[in-house]
Image (tube, rainbow, N blue to C red; front, side, top):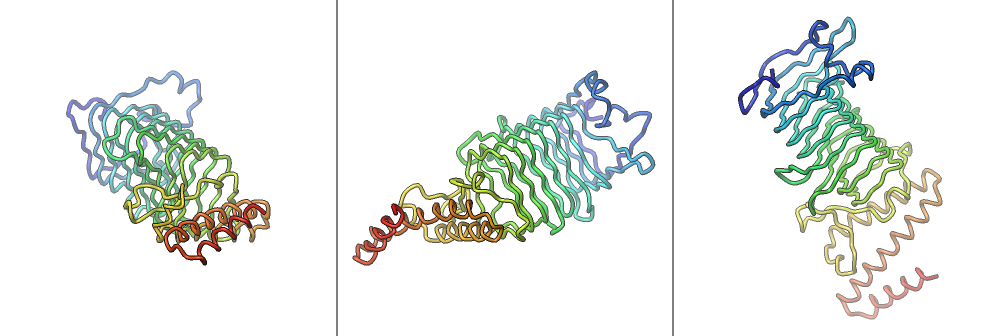
Length: 330
């Protein structure tokens, strides 16, 4: 229906989508790879508006159609979706904005994207469930607003997994945001050219392994939960940042010179992240990473003392700054 639509906007509301074995074999993601290789890409030219749609699972055969090998030329909006198991997009391309919001009453479900390309603004939202993104390219060539990729959940049993994705930065303030409440965040083998933000996140368990962080990581006021979290200096060293009220949190704040410490609120947040990280490394018995993160924190303390020395012009602040410099050298 979407592919055959001649309208500029395709709208479907208050409907149920069920699996029909006689019609929907084309949309089964676990088909044999040789079968999938023979499938043609479906091109959809209209803007898509799906509102209050129930995506129903076939209980008998545990089958559910997915959006498979589809190229959406215009923006896609799926709102108030009800999902009994999962809503998946596999081998798809989105040339414009993509927004999906699962209804609050639809819980214990999954949003799953794999081997897909996103060319614009991206927004995933659910209350209780899992957001899984694997081997996807987020490259906002056709952005119509700020270059943001947003992943939002709002339950302390939710789970977000980002694995083997690439997040391209196309402007100076592009960001990838993970926010809300969740139990576990897994970041494996991703490349983040854009800044990664999970400030103010309420979370129990974080694992960050083998990622390539080209941008900064905003960890403002994040509590890492239990000692189960797996964080390492080789992922975080030189990348920690926070948000600043002075620029409306549009940029990640990390001081490059002593003058930056004029923003005392951002500075306090910044050192709080370092204190949390060093305490976490120590509680895990990771003394090597504790020492590295501690040295990095002390270097910034020296930079801040330089700022106070220049601002106050007193012997006490000058002495504190120079003493910290000396201790750093020793």
